[in-house]
Image 1 (tube, rainbow, N blue to C red):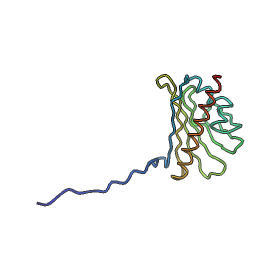
Image 2: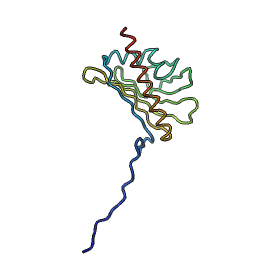
Image 3: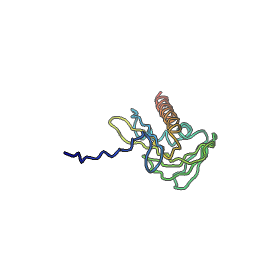
Image 4: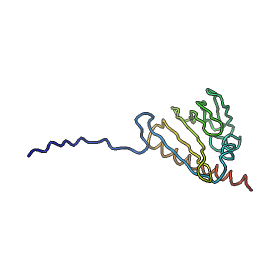
Length: 149
């Protein structure tokens, strides 16, 4: 009896590498704060300094640009008040833009805060950004806690 089964090799899935947008990373955390409190911090001068960098100012208009004192630049792609900001994000020492989306959504008795970045250049850049966005979420959570005191 002849075995007619063929075994095509399946490409091995690499964590964080997509077919369409290259390397990507997502960092999220549920914070035990009201969605409005988390959103207001994100778009405040102090909050923008924590996640974009000092000196950042965002306008809600599509196509608006921003620059930070540390050299991060970008352009607003979409701004949905109270829920989502999508923009390009590029430090001064990078040769490519990435796309960053920041979202907040209700989650149980708190708010789910998410940072999703795509179009990263490599697995090493992805790992560096994972560490970066985790520290940003830590800083935002600490700022929310400090605002309650």
